Image (cartoon, rainbow, N blue to C red; front, side, top):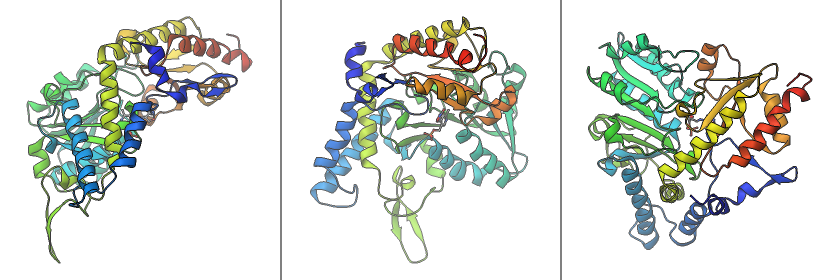
Length: 410
Ligand code: 7TS
């Protein structure tokens, strides 16, 4: 991987703060966008812009081709059988809400259980809370070991409970950085017919996804966390399940016929894509997929592992740092969350920001996890393939200065 050449594709990384280029370590929140992706979306608007699937004219046909071409690329990217299984949404959040509303709520009853983990982002938690409240189903949790972040083995037995009708879990945790290897869990839940939803927001940008191999029933991710524009997300769903589900939103382009009192709906995936589609976003997502695939998953993974290992080694040498979750780089995927003793995370972030370093602080939309771990808030450095070891060294150097700046010893 030619890092210098790759970084040329990201002019934003040259932004200077305090006389030196910014260090962007908030990639789990959103990634930066490379020129080829920006150019692809602009090229669509300059040459092919139209409303897809609605007209016989040149631009509508061009827009349809752009949109449908993007879908085919996403289908291949996920290893799905058909584009009928690929639904465009705004983001992971909307994808998960779609499943909760259109699949779970009409099917759950009192006595049923929804099983999630304590490590979920709010997007993969609140929709299930609502589904449980509306249907009388019970929302239950798989808890993690507070030191290692791994699932408690006795809680994994909950997967075998036939009352569990739906399991929803993050593929990679946005706080602990653990890849939860969902395959054995999916197999266990499937053994008694439960449906499994994977939140791929933090996995799809970083590793090869194959929904057929994973065996999940639904898989959600966001384009903006993998170099695409904001506002385009994906829901993969097994065709047989999507077929049975009611539409989520109602309106144009998702119908077959409409009479004064009734409507029949379009075939998949249009049934779930009401209104004018975000074609610019679809084009951007396709270009982003091509961009990350051209770099290659092995190269992306190797670079992220290097950055994580260097960060963990540097943090281990600082006496007043506590790391959330595992401390072995082999177990961390692209991000490290930590606390600095005596210093509020927001102060840490502000001090680092003055040196042009962007990290995230707070509960990272995983408040129940933070409460469970007995932590109010934490700091998080999250990487992507364009980050460098020099950036990590600079971050570590500035982090070392935080406690002394607040009047504490190192
Ligand atoms: N699931 C996980 C595991 C996430 O990390 C996020 C976003 C989402 C779902 C929601 O994605 P969205 O695109 O719909 O917003 N995570 C973060 C984060 O860690 N910091 O900012 C956003």
